[in-house]
Length: 138
Length: 179
Image (spheres, each protein chain N blue to C red):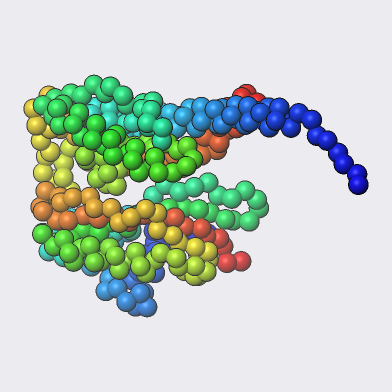
C-alpha cells in the first residue's frame, strides 16, 4: 500500500539531497501544523489536500494534491518566502522519482506561492500547492 | 478545359456560421451553468461565521457579465469594506480576461481573508481556540459566533476537483441541446 502523499513528500524534503535544511519533528512536520514549543523557528508542514480523480483502469494511477505550509518566525517575511521558494524550486517539475516504493510520475506546482498574511504572533505564512501523479512501482 | 460552377457557396458559409454561432452560444451557456454549479458546491463548504465569506462568492464572464455575486448582502460593521473590496475584485477580473480571444469564466471569493481561510487546514475546525488554547474573539462589531463550526479549508478547490466530470457533462449537454 502506498503512503499518504504528504508522508512521501515530507521524506523527500528531509532527504539530504534536497539541499534544504529540514529535519522531521524539528522544523518539518506532516499534516499537523505545530505551535506549542516551536515559536522561534521557521516551520514547514506538508499536508494532504484535495486531488483529482484517479485515471480509470486497472493500474493504480492516482492524482492527489499536497500543500506545503511555511510559517516563519515573527516578522521573518524574507526568510519564510525564501524557504517557500526553495521548496517550490525543488519539488516543481520533479518526475519519475521513487519514494518509499511509490513511483512519483510528476509533481507540479499549482499556481503561485500564496502569501497568507501574518498570524496573531506576527509570523508570516505562505502556502504552495502541488498536483501529483503517482503509481505503484510494481 | 473542364470547369465546374459552384452555386450558392455564400449561402453554405452563412448557414455554417449560423450553426457555429448556435454552438458558441450553447457552449457559453453551458460554461456559465457549470461555473454556477462549482460555486454552488463551494459556497456551503466555506467556513461560516458572519456569512460574509460565503456572500463574497462571484462568477464573472470574460464579456463582463456578473452572473453570481452581483448584489451580495453583507453583515456587520465591515459591510462597507466588504462592498468596496467586492467591487474592486470584480473590476480587476475583467481586464485580465478580456485580453483572451476565447470566452472564459472567473469564479472566486472576494473577501480579503478568503485565501488565508482557504489555505488554512484549521478553518472551521478550531473549536473556538487557537493552537495554544486561547479563545477567539468574535469579529469586530459582530454578534456572530467567534469561530466557524461549519465548512473547512480548500472549499473552492475541492468543489472544482470533485465535480469536474459533472461540469463537463453540463457543458456537453448544453451544446447538444443547442445544435
